[in-house]
View 1 (cartoon, one colour):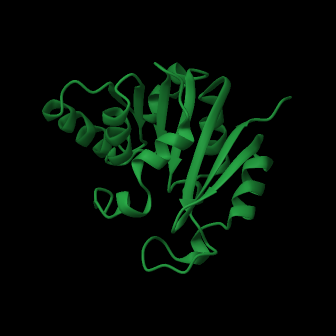
View 2: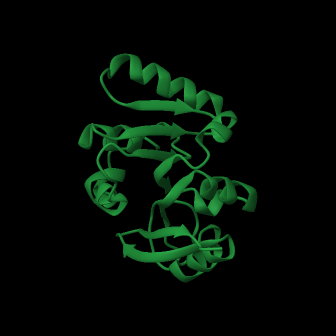
Length: 177
């Protein structure tokens, strides 16, 4: 399901990339990358970016490494959660697709800690306000307002919103302290 090409129909990689608005040569962390479907799509669309495909599951990292052997020339670095300390404050952009509803507070703080000064996070998740036949049940995900409130409670400032067919996207920065 993570590699189903239908995902790219209702959540187009070019639209995700536009929301990222990453500067030339920037580091982008795909937080909770899974099989890396969007990490690979972004790396192909923007070969100037340094994409870190971060996942907590070693089997996903192994899949990414194997895929990189056949798809050479992409600037993707598979990383596990053991690499979080080395990635601290290095990401111009963090992308988190379909993971907000699964993240605990500690993981959400870890996501924020990856951001370089003036960095932005693009959080895309299933919209609980939308009837759909795909994705998790509506009672397992957030509405746009609930997601925005959760991010703000975790030290983010939401600076933009975007709606997709089944998803919302929130662009956020770390709140000024």
